[in-house]
Image (tube, rainbow, N blue to C red; front, side, top):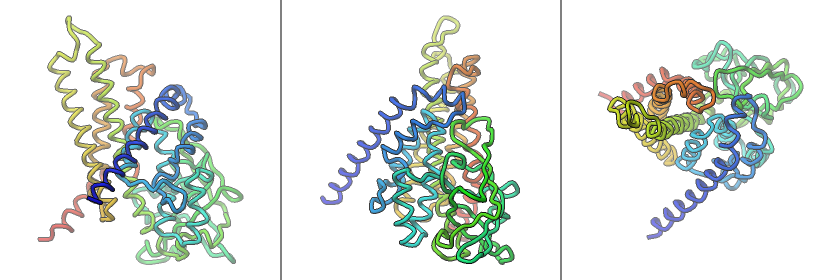
Length: 388
């Protein structure tokens, strides 16, 4: 009975949070999303509202000032946000991966210092992994951190980094021992605040506008030794890979949001648009499209739910997260194209949301590990879990 009571309480808490998010989206995001996206303008007022909602501390433990939400609840928030304006979800997702790295691998002193400021949104940021010559192959990064007194001197370039322009601090993957073999033993993760020795420039993108994506150059940037996450060199790759499981669940949830938004707008439009004397929803060719779009969106949602629950149980879930990320993001790409075809010229017009979904969706198949990489991860885990 106690377990049932606890579950009921959790369900009620989740419903309250999701209702608050829905109200925020309808009141503060939907009315301005189209205009801000068109201008590629960072949504300062929306960010302030997200601070008030506690979204910057969504998955951070309550003892550090966060909401302590499960991945299952968090993924539902991301889906809702992405269905209205996907860029908003990126502002707090990369930030929370950074926070999770500190919460999982940081020293207690680091947790007490950083996490309350992350949870409140006083300090915002993300993760800096990708470099001009190293994306999927993270072990190929060239950014170095060499010891200098009571800290490190960091030199190198990171690119396509979310929240790098408007953010304050990033969890940066560096090489503290470039000669180490295997390579991952020479990699470390450290928190680097923007300041002297750090320059950043904004990058222009096809879609995913509004959120700032930038290139950072570290030029003899001094980083205190206390900012080395966990206080031990050589553990950076493992520290960040754990966070990428949550990141992939997040990106998959974004895919569900885009796929669902495309479906909902297409169902509505198909009942309004008439050809040959009847709504196009009554034409079999359109019905086939709607049926496939609905099936893709629902299957994607269930895969995300399964991956989030595995994550919440503390299980290794790179297989589940990889499957969710692969399928849900491809569903977003599929549904965005079908929605554009179904809307005809209106889908191609910048006056409607469909062309935005069509520009945003392909990023999901690339970010947090390409879908080609997801297939490799899935296959390897299938073999590892089912030895002959």
